[in-house]
Amino acid sequence: MIKTSFIFIISLFCIFGVSGQQLSYLKPNVSMPAHPRILWAKGEEKKILDNIAADKNWARIHQVIIDESNRMLAEPTLERIQIGRRLLATSRECISRVFYLSYAYRTTNDKKYLARAEQELLKVSQFSDWNPSHFLDVAEMTMGVAIGYDWLYYDLQASSKDVIKDAILKKGIEPSLDSRYNSWLKASHNWNQVCNAGISYGALAIFEDHTALATQIIDRAIGSIRLPMQDYKPEGAYPEGYSYWGYGTSFNVMFLSAVQQVFGSDFDLSAAPGFLKTAGYFQQMVGSSGKNFNYSDAGNGAGLSPAMFWFAHRNKDNSLLFNEKNYLQGDTRSLGRDRLLPAAMIWGKNMSLDNATTPKQLIWVGQGKNPVALMRTSWTNPNAIYVGFKAGSPSVNHGHMDVGSFVMDANGERWSMDFGMQEYESLESKGVKIWGREQDAERWQVYRYNNLAHSTLSFDGEFQRVEGYAAIDHWTDKPGFLSANSDISVVYKNKVQQALRGVAIIKGQYVAVRDEITSAKQATTVRWAMLTPAEVSLEKDGTATLVQKGKKMQLKVLEPAGASIKTWSTVPPHDYDAPNPGTTLVGFEVALPANTTAALTVLLIPEGAKADKSVRPLKDWNKQ
Image 1: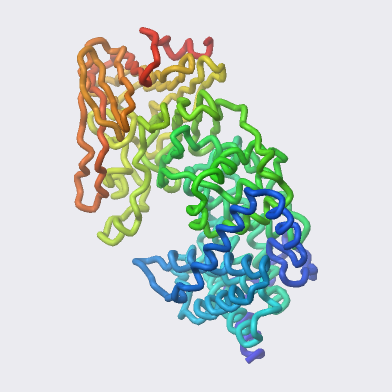
Image 2 (image 1 turned 90 degrees about the vertical axis):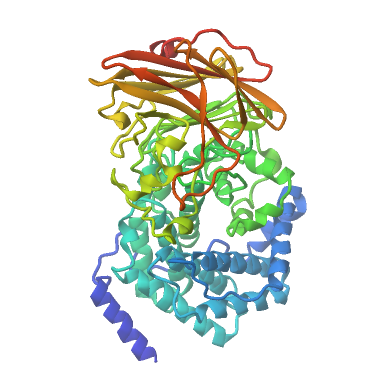
């Protein structure tokens, strides 16, 4: 058996070109610590237990993990249930169960957690495969199984260890060598981060049994993961948005933390431009309503992120835990849905959440592939105004045609919103091809994905140009005039000579959205629209009253004079589109003759605020 396995691995080396590769980062005979070695070494339990005893915040997180572990004891063991092309839900549940149960065992020594973790590990190890055709499934399953194998190494039955170790090798690592399944090695998005992290965990777990192969796998990952890490430059804005930051960046940090723990170095990976700054992006993406700026394929929820504890420690910046501390003051039961939650206990073991200070920065601007400007009037006032403004391009991974879109919070509510994602299987199961990014791709027919369903402009009812890209061109950081503006002309190619959009919070009281447009050589009709969850009542003189939960906001058109505000239904055109109940598009249309310049100026005035009767041209905003 041993001889057969050895021959098979050698064959893989030859077929997939792993053997003979020069190591770029690791030494051939690199030493490896004893188990447990991944994230949390033997003997480090005491520090976490001391933290739990000394800080009620850590005690809350710990108790969530223990409560969830107890709940898991009564659940049936995992089954290989594939939904469409994905086994991912099962893989994620595997991480959650094994991570939580293994943590519970290491902190309590209660063998009921060990026994159940061993059952789960054996069950998934005996699956026919971990679905390599959708490799995220393999990566997450490998990570979960590797954590359990490593953390419980000396307490698992010998027969169980053989089965689990074999599964890590054959169902996790070996498929990653197959060119049919490993295109993620050259990707610059979350697949690279997740897959390299998961497979590297497998290599770390069984390192002593397959040293040459494991060394190559980890060395390969150190080189490959640099590709997506380049996408954080220059300031840390993550191109795929809030939800995928929570996915890709968290697994990236899982990788860095494990490598640092084992080798004493992260091989300068965390020095990638913008990477350590990206925690600021993630923090600033959450508005005063408690919702995130959910552009691209994102949900609108927000919650504690274990990765933020790693960033706070690395940056020596406790203000990065401001949101995390606030989340712990509320209902903590939702924390148990985060499969990586035990990592927060590890990364935060040397810090106190009582020392989390209030951030000072009221505007955060990040360029890169999908630039954003994020501004607010206060971090502590629940009625504060918050605006997220997006430039960028529809061409990025998971991108929408949302260049120029914005969200706006005031008085604890979201007034300008973004639909965010539609669940992929709901589209794929109906044959919709959602992953093309060409101008004529079927993706853009999905209602939530194109600009007609976003708080931005459209011309003659046409889609934005996929190849277009817009930067944040200027911004101001004075508390009385927080602003950002962008030249978004390129996404309306052939419709305009120029389209400039600026968004500002003025005097801390209200928001102005100003567009300056020069039409092309033919006439066009521009539609200004804002997506809102509020009930809309149309008034005279270019105003509308928005109402939700007993609160009000006024939308007022300053320019062009006499604009007639209207609403558009958000009932989508296709049976495959998700329904959008309780939402409305509100705005106006303006017919522009050829070669005409016009300004569109709209004020969003929260209840109780007073607004000026004019807004300066964009060229003067930087003079404010």
